[in-house]
Each structure stands twice: as structure tokens, then as C-alpha cells.
Length: 94
Image (cartoon, rainbow, N blue to C red):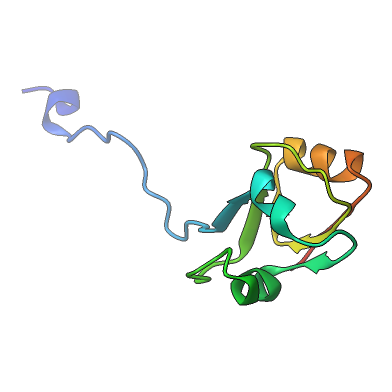
């Protein structure tokens, strides 16, 4: 039997150290008072995030009406554009 038939076929390579995030959409930030700073600790205190096991990542689903300073580990491009269009700022934490 030829070698290429004897060797097992690899379907995909698994990530050794995958990144996991606590994700939150921009629409969930509308309940927060305008002008405040939003980070993972403040979201847990307000009850918006219930299990903060990973760093925060902001996704761009929905609309934002309040001017906020958002501190997160990662932002999607659409989330960053919506936050800055509302007059807020995005700060990336390490």
C-alpha cells in the first residue's frame, strides 16, 4: 500500500492556546449613564455581565446613543466606529 494511503489525514489543527473573551454588544451599553467610564468591573457591578472569566471584547451589534469611555481588551471595527460616532472613546487594555 502506498505511503499516502497509510498516513492518517489531518482534518484541522487545533489551537494550543486559544483566546477567549467575554463578549458584549454595543446595544447593551445604552443603559449606562452618559459620560461614564465602562470597563469589566463596572459592567459586573451594574449587572450587565454576570460571569467575567475572560477579558472583555466589544462587538458592534446595535446602536449606541450615549457618549462613553469604553475600556476593553478588544474591539471590532464596527464597534469602535459606533462608539466614536456617538462621541465616546475606546481604550484598549493589555
